[in-house]
Image (tube, rainbow, N blue to C red; front, side):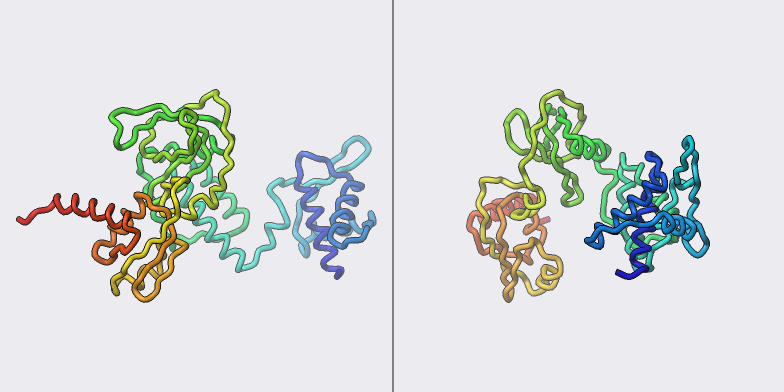
Length: 332
């Protein structure tokens, strides 16, 4: 390993120690930490000298180094070392133009999230990152996210996020579109998912002992509940693999769906796939998905540009919906 690499590992180890306001690092502790990090990296035991640590500290304090605000503090007859500015880190000084560009993109995404009710605290984090990393903020936005910050129930999003993290059982007062009045649902919340510009909460319904999803815009109130939290065994990273949207009947089979596409719509569907299983051969689109309300609505949204070949159950369902829609219109 090169001498420069040795030095950088020592500087990083010292930086971590000096930035820790909860522990006192005496010279012996700094030697131990630097030796440990070099040993871990090199694979053989290494011992750093006392003299080397003092030289490293002087370099870190210098203009040629990092201008680090390292101070000595007395603890009886001994001295420990610490940054006088707890926000300081040598890592803040090392950022490439490529990393800066990526951080700006990430911060813009973070700025989008902090506009949601309950996530205002992210604005402070965003500001600190921009200032601490010396990033220049653009005066105008160059990226737009489709969202509806005025969506009903969106104010519950932040609290639901926290309840999921802390595994807190809830009583949710919920009124579905079909119900005449709201019902109280005891639920262990697991997962939040956005689909078609709406948010959905997935959790375990304690009354029916099944996984349920609730549209957040239909929630009227949320309160904590003393009932035990029902832990989830579901891998939500895979839960939606076989569906379009959020409705997933675990007992339903995966179907082979074939759809005739118009010539005009083929380039659009190629550039914006409906599902990960999508295959297009000539003008035939093939999907392997479970049938649900969302796939019906999606196909109908393309009107005459899509014609379902199979399965027959889906064709018949769409035909029934189209007949009802046709009856809504008449010749003037």
